[in-house]
Structures are given as C-alpha cells and as structure tokens.
Length: 111
Image (tube, rainbow, N blue to C red; front, top):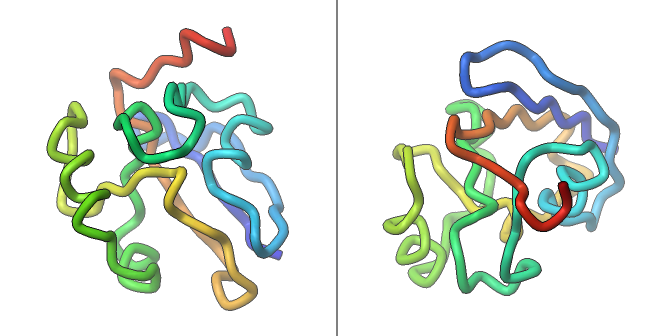
C-alpha cells in the first residue's frame, strides 16, 4: 500500500488515501475527487494530469521519459518536480507519495 497525500495549490492538505501497488496515480486521483482532467485518458498526449511531486518523493520515482518531458513543457505551472499522474505507477517500495495539484487544474470532463 502507498499512502498518497494530495495537497491544494496553496500547500494545504486536501485528502489522504491508500492505494494499491500497480495503480496509476491518475486513477487514484480521480477516485479521490481531485481536479485532474486527464483528457487523453492517460495515454500521455496531453498535460491535464500534471502534478507537482514532493522533492523527496520525486527522487524515488523512475525518471520521466522524453515524451513525458515534452508534455510537461506544455503544462501550466510546471516545476522541476512536475510529473504526469498518468505516468506514475505506484509500487510496494513507495510507501508515501505527496503531490500538489497545480492552481489551474480543473476537471472539465468529470465535474
């Protein structure tokens, strides 16, 4: 299990959830009613599931692919710790994961 903590853009904790290894962070975020759109349904052809990962946790994730980096170039409020939630697969080794939702994040598809 991984404890995922979702923080609002201002840094306040919004929600903490437990997630199984093998789950995509985007699916966990949708289940937790986070405002990530994921307009491409997680096939990495948009940047609407952009999240900012806590610096400590970012270092424990596999490196982003070149394609993911290209999509992040299109994301509003991207930082050096930005990732696409559709590309983060939770593992047993990842006990906690803190992510901040960018201030412009909206989920127009799922209300």
